[in-house]
Picture 1: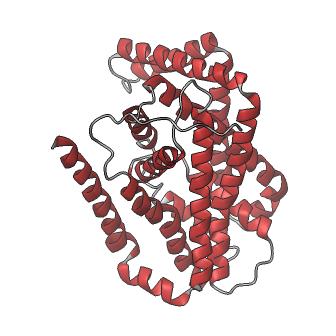
Picture 2: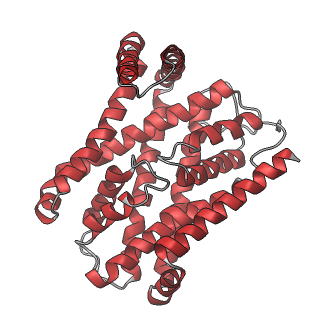
Picture 3: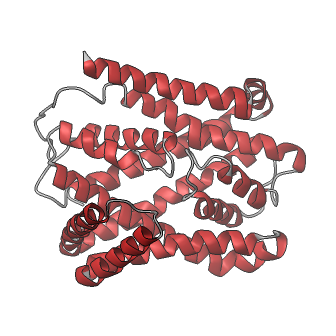
Length: 344
């Protein structure tokens, strides 16, 4: 009975979030008018890009789980992926996705340690993939964007710096556990002196535990170099599909496509600049970043419609689909017969 109440609460929460955004942020009338103006076939292609993004994510997560002495069925991996998509959208800074994924993976028989390590490996690979993608974009398009967009260099320097620092810190923790502990413990003590962290001793214990767990997971990565390489390539394809969504929206307006790479580069910059904004769905920051970059492509009278469509694909759609997969998230533990993994 308790699990049914929790599952019902999740559905109601997601409906409230959706309706709240639709009425107070985007407007139901605006959403309806969008579909009357745009080419529905190109919009369907945009939806397919999001589906391919999720499929890539599921394959990457499945490969990550396969690094350990455990198994998951592909249908369970895809469900885990969509649970993560849903909770990433409805929680600040996407903080709810991984804990809910780990909970579900444990519920279907994957050990908590294995689940956490698999999700950590996937996070490392994603950060490295996004950083590599961003480096390529900045090499070829920084000067062009900086010349055209006021304040671009500050936006991108912030986003690129944060993503790069995260990726480097993950690698430092993976390769040098002792040094990483000293650095993180030192930062934690500094935050405690500034009264930003309470119960210092407990926090330091948590730091040691998390660093040890992460380091152990990273050691497993080094034993599966080819698998990790395949995961990285899949991540690059996954990001490519995500960055294609604005291109599909652009084409749905009947506008001539002059440079596919430039638009994909702009999508990469939007993701770089907004992925660490501490609000559900990076609300506000995501729209602002999209506006700054894509005003180079969309006519001014169509830009607000493009932003709305982009949010429909990248925010509303994951919530709607993820809600379906999350409807029975809580309940009794389910032990299923494992399906053989495909070797990557």
